[in-house]
Amino acid sequence: MSGRAFVEFVGVEKAFAGKPVLRGMDLAIGKGEILYIIGTSGVGKSVTIKHLVGFLPIDKGEIWFDGQRVDRLDERGFYPVRRRVGMVFQNATLFDAMTLTENVALPLRKHQGLGWKAALADARRRLAQVYLADFADRYPAELSDGMRKRAAIARTLTLAPEVVLFDEPTTGLDPVNARRIDRLIRELSRTLGVTAVVVSHDLPSIMSVADRVAFLYQGRVHALATPAELAASADPIVQQFIAGRSSGPMETPGF
Amino acid sequence: MSAAPSLPVRALAALGRPVIAAARATLELWGVLIGTLAGIIRSYGKGGRRPRGAVVAQMYAIGNRSLVFVAVTLGFIGMVMMYQACLQFSRAIGDLSQVGLQFLRLVVSDFGPTLTAMMLATRVGAGIAAEIGSMKVTEQLDALRMSGVLPIDYLLVPRFLASIVMTVALTILGAAIMYGAGGLTAWLSFGVNPRTFFDPAMVQPRHLALGLVKAVTYGAAIPIVSGFCGLRARGSSEGVGWATTAAVVGSSFAVIALDFALSVGALWLFGGDL
Image 1 (tube, helix red, strand yellow):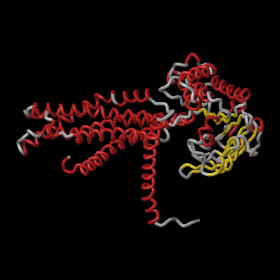
Image 2 (cartoon, rainbow over the protein chains, first blue to last red):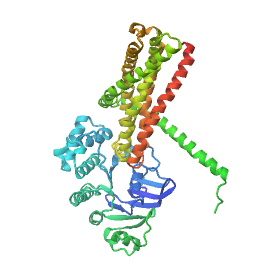
Image 3 (cartoon, rainbow over the protein chains, first blue to last red):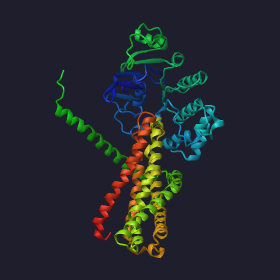
Image 4 (cartoon, chains in turn red, blue):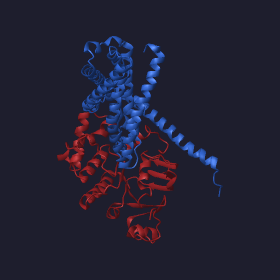
């Protein structure tokens, strides 16, 4: 064993057009853990998870997944990583020209090499698991945001990933649908042992679902704690964020 | 603190930045072309999944939906060009017996493919860039990559193949309409006998070959340039708008530049006998 955590970011730096976003970020995530990444907009939360699946190259540092260094992989090298690490995007990102079943069947065809018939049959089963069996032949434009999001989750889960990255999964959803997504994340972790890394601003979600919370500030992990510890933190910056106060010691670009 | 760079250094930097950006963009454009060709090999090679349905759907979108647009535009251009040609010929030499012969040669080897492609560059190029650009800014391309699909294979390969086939088909149709409309104008406005006008004597196989090569090249260039612009879209709707505009400008420019290059190449190959 390499002695590394299941997912580990070591001294990761990333800048866009010369503007640093991540400035030597260190973060270790254990297997089966539900880790929420929180912080103000533009602090690099989504950037962090996109680095893990190779959507954005890092400028400096290391990223490790299950003992393998992944930050130097090329597009093809990331294929095996993306079979094991799924991602639910902020928007549902379903393909408009495909029905829900076809959307969900796509990774089964491409990653697992299933035939179209077998992939469609499996996709229908997956859609039933997220209560969308009756909508399997509908197009994404015909569904509500919550349904699209659930279909996107079904698509992500088709490959039985070991890690699922959620980019603001409850943003734009009503409280009922948001709590359903929370429950789904918890069930994935508890019943299937999936490691969940969730980027979110949704405090009720964070407090009820997270095992640990990483609070990003100024390109680094400023605080890493359980939700209860974070809520009780005496750190004024953490307190300002948790309380949602507009004034305080936190420096927010653009304000 | 280090001293501020001197004026010549700053001027050089200001000059160098766009040059580097242009070089980078050219490399990326080549990357899209090579990636698309590799995608065709992947799709049609051993064990590949041939995107037949997607190619047919794109043929319909690119070809059938452009049919009226291309037919009407090239018809009107044929009429205007022939009217002007007859006017100038009658003023300068007073003989219109050669006008149809020369017109057909030009339509086959140049005007037909080039004007058809210019029309397609605006309609099809904008569509391709807008669709791919929207998918880029809404992270659908990343979702494709997560699904194990290379966006170029899924989006550009079918459009590339369909565009080549339909550009050739529309060129044949457009050239025929242009020639017919020109003949009608010459007959009705200047009394040119249709039997004199519709005489293919001057058209040689090399003219047909040049026209075909141009149509195939334009058909390949339009989706590559437009797809490249779509893939470069950034941000939100503004980025998609930029990509769409860039695709129309870039595709049109590519058609003109390729017309020049292919015409020069043909002249070099066939000499003044073209």
